[in-house]
Image (cartoon, rainbow, N blue to C red; front, side, top):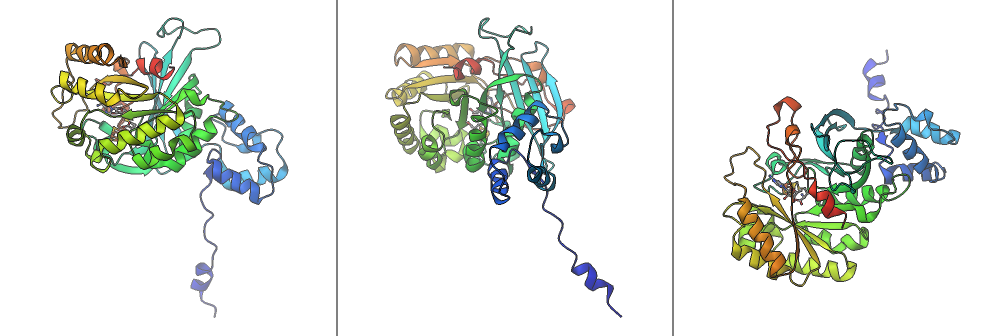
Length: 388
Ligand SMILES: C[S@@+](CC[C@H](N)C(=O)[O-])C[C@H]1O[C@@H](n2cnc3c(N)ncnc32)[C@H](O)[C@@H]1O
Ligand code: SF4
């Protein structure tokens, strides 16, 4: 008598889970293997962008039969799900909570801005209000900066390139996205391959974002900065410097030990020589830690040789046990005055807005809406900075 266990052990393995159509390298490879022209791929992306809730790729018009068969077998329109969208009372800011296929969640933040008014007044405009989307690149982050809510989570997972792009697909339900900043959860240069692939999709059809309107913010991963211009020409680079010397940097950003300030500045100099791009310097203002006059002078000297814009960021308390306090307005203004007046460095101060929906581009940690602590801020003035 044949044993019943032999038939169960020979049953075929389950098919691999279906992937996002926005996982660009994967869909291109699958189309190539099936002999289908890659020209159909942007048409599929366009359909999903315009129909973000479509569950079915059979509805994409005018594809060859082989493409429908492949899509049915191996792809989904999106693999992440928009679970919550919270809008601030002044309608400048919408925060999206997005669940990934691995069960983790990330946040993305839409910030609206009307160039003619210098701010957004919440009213519709002919042609639409142009918005900036702050996207996440990782769930959590292993860099462990002591002032950052995401850093307190530790590293959980990398987003795929498709999951990065899908944040824009979900956000497009609410706003026409014109700028993208990688200032949400995670260190984008620690997820480099997915970052490059996602940006290449965003600057191509059908998204057509201008490279000048995409900004990648990094803690300063030197080996990736060295190849950034080659892989992502004309994309803006923002560096979270936060201190003018190595000791303070290591104190507030433990990962800085692996990226000594001198080597980081040398890498930035080479990057600028090659790319001719302005470098955006982010500097979080921490009371008594890095906000004194001598620090402004040190920073001014450090940046004298650069074409740089400094953005001074008021620290947003994150509710963990660190003892940081935000600098007084007086200190922030004095810091700005030194950088501008003595070192002729363009220096902006980030405004705090949208506090009623808690959490900001730059201080995101995923929680359910009713668990969020108050005091978040949406950084509308970033939009001005990024348009430069
Ligand atoms: C969350 S990070 C993500 C991008 C990248 N990992 C980086 O550090 O540049 C984006 C920006 O938010 C800033 N940030 C983090 N925690 C903050 C806080 N509590 N208050 C204000 N800004 C904060 C970071 O320093 C960084 O400049
Ligand atoms: S500031 Fe950036 S690098 Fe530092 S922990 Fe937060 S997300 Fe990571």
